[in-house]
Length: 150
Image (cartoon, rainbow, N blue to C red; front, side, top):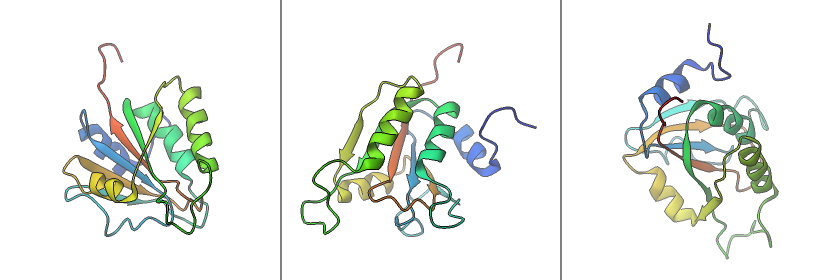
């Protein structure tokens, strides 16, 4: 029996093999996870129902399990019909989760197509598909370095 919050066997296995600069995608319910995935990445589907499980819930658990050095969001194209005049509300939730975890990392939006390219890299090791219905909720985490004593 594990003591950590992360108890999913496949997610634990992939993260244990991941190293510095590995990419982990926490995908919202609209992301095409089956087709927009790295060549060596594993897909874990946690999309039980609309809204379950959320990207925020997965983020909280992963932050307790792995060091993070960067967090990319999928930027909103100017011509997108769902574009908001401000950051999506869920991004403020992510900022709060990072802050509460003591992680001083800013969200770094990258364009939609650059985001897909980043996911299609050899460094992408895991996609966790959620049922999150928030718009622009995708997060691409870059694994950091584990320091001595951690």
